[in-house]
Image 1: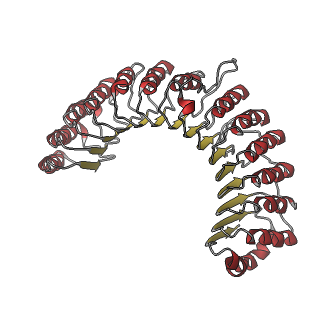
Image 2: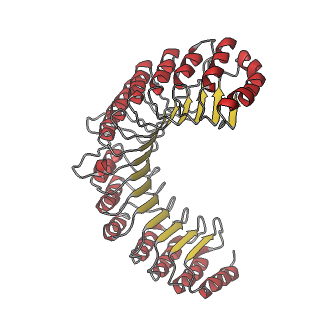
Length: 464
């Protein structure tokens, strides 16, 4: 987009003085630069009745000058309720961020704020102003910050977290901070400060490749103030991919999660970390105490590209199974244990525990292992015979690297037939399972003819 096109765009916008919503995507428009940003910002300032602005300006070379003028002009739109700014890879620096924050702070009615600030050369002390703004923002209830690959350290993160914790209206927080100068205590520091929040109900954050210390107090997420986040938190999503969180850290995480009795949805990604059986056992001790939990998603898989590997042992699975069996409110369960060498006994025990979750509606379990050659076993039949006791199941996807005998497959079909609410089914058995392969066509006909008579909702199935 050249200078003339920017001018034309600005002129068209400035004529719509009663416009309430604006969405513009100029991603990768490298010719936009400061001049284009200035013309667009000037047009926006003339439409003072905007309630929602979404500007996608990723990699448009606006630099700090463009961000400065954008902040100055946005400040004139005092009726804004929702702001989304995509400023990734623009090298706006400290001055640019300060201008953006100052401009946004004039929107006293702001309820939702999303800022994409990845790769912008933002320095160590540049979050203090944002922290002050958050303290004074009286209506903000949704905050999404993408701060990856800048120059923040743990002190910067603490300043930001303090502002977040002092917000009395904030309910939804997404904080992506990977790729900054954060040491092994950053996870603990963030948890300690956010623990003081009395309003947040939904947290999504990442701690990609964080390494927890061996010290007694390191690697902990603390949620333990008297009137704190533990009394309000309902949804928690944590990305701990390749985090190397140790046994002490998992024990602390489990203990603090147990205090969150309002928690209904929990999603934690431990993919390619260094979690062993004891670590999983420590976490499970806390999970089983969350009485109101109705959705649980845990990823302990190992990827081929990952530098680290989880090593989940049998006794860790045993404690996890015991914990799951006590989650009587659970409606959705998603467990990814791929490439962890789960034994037949552990697999069957998981099935026994799942059968205790009588309200379960959706089940996804990946216990396959690409590193082992599958052996003939009756474990899958034993597992399915237990899982099919969950009579309200509507969706089921099970992956396991084991071969089953032909007669056992026939028994599995009979079990599935009893699930009258089921509408999606995927059973992924070992690719070498010739018995199952030979039965595939017959099984599809079985689903169409036999099961549909009993389970009229079964509309999607896949056999691998």
